[in-house]
Amino acid sequence: MKEFEKTTAEVEKDRDYELEQENCIEFLKGSKTATVTFSQGRFISKIYKLAEKFPEDVQIVAENKNKEGNVSSIVAHIPTHYLNISNRKRELSDEERKAIGERLSGWRSDAMPEGEI
View 1 (spheres, rainbow, N blue to C red):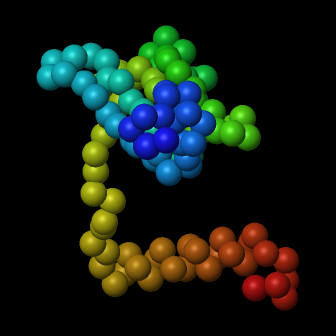
View 2 (cartoon, rainbow, N blue to C red; view 1 turned 30 degrees about the vertical axis):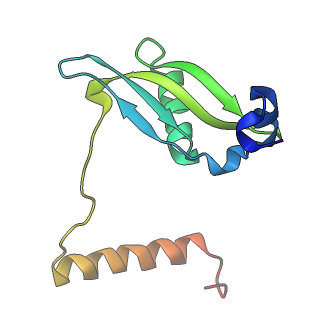
């Protein structure tokens, strides 16, 4: 049977959902709500946390599960004011770098038992 002659059920059976990694944010100008689709774990977790903390603002519309039964992607409605695009790259002075390094060293020594660093 040629590929284009397969039934929908046959195509679905052969799909590799792990390769489908779409992330999408959709909203219209002036809209108060955005529809988001995420397949990346960090965004899925963030949406779940927001839905738990703000159930009146964040609604999970659909959860797609992989063959193992784990959530592989979600679709949710969120307020557009939750959206934020930023450039996380910061320009640090030498003094700021040194201060951050000292804080990190102090944190590491507090977190690790003596002799394990």
